[in-house]
Amino acid sequence: MKVLLCGATGMVGQGVLRECLRAEDVARVVTVGRAATSIRHPRLQEIQRSDLLDYRPLEAELTGFDACFFCLGVSSVGMTQADYTRLTYDLTLAAAQTLSRLNPQMTFVYVSGAGTDASERGRSMWARVKGRTENALQRLPFRAVFLFRPGAIQPLHGAISKTPAVRFAYALSRPVMPLLRRLMPGWVLTTEVVGQAMLAAARFGQGRAILESPDIDALAKGRWRPR
Image 1: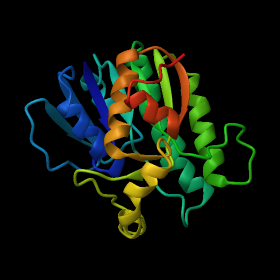
Image 2: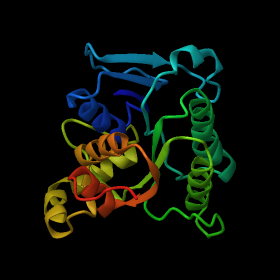
Image 3: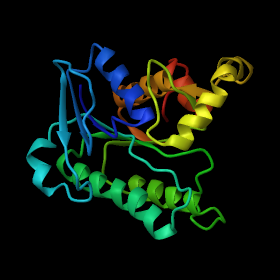
């Protein structure tokens, strides 16, 4: 399996990259992002690009993929709707529209968020924008589209957020995260579980599905299959 990973330097992306490189059936991983990771691996290729709204110069390098794991995302805190839309909807669709044309047999897995508003009419700005993004992705001619809506995610194996406020929040919650996972199995995920679930979705490779946290956990553990 050949995997394209967008957002490998973010907290979730770091965890997903680790699981991809550990998976025996992943022959190659190509990352696309503004910054490079610090990882060196014979199956890893990194593409750095400052403009992630225009993939035309990269098209020759974006063919032949079985799956795309799209982990790029920003916090909406302090952002206008226009700015958040550009960095969420526009950024995602720029990649997805190009990839669906070049790789129609691809499985596209998108990290959305718990509380996303598929109606696009709710009060929460970020939820409306995420819902619009999800809806647009489901209309693209991929072989399969999976929309992950995680809530709390425990970073493991050195994965850290690039956002200071998020790092601070996770530092405060670190002592109780293992307890929360025991008390609410399936609702508090880990970066490891998210990565394993993405690989499971890519292996299944068909259908359209919205996955909440318990679904993601079950998929990673082999207890759930996309319909």
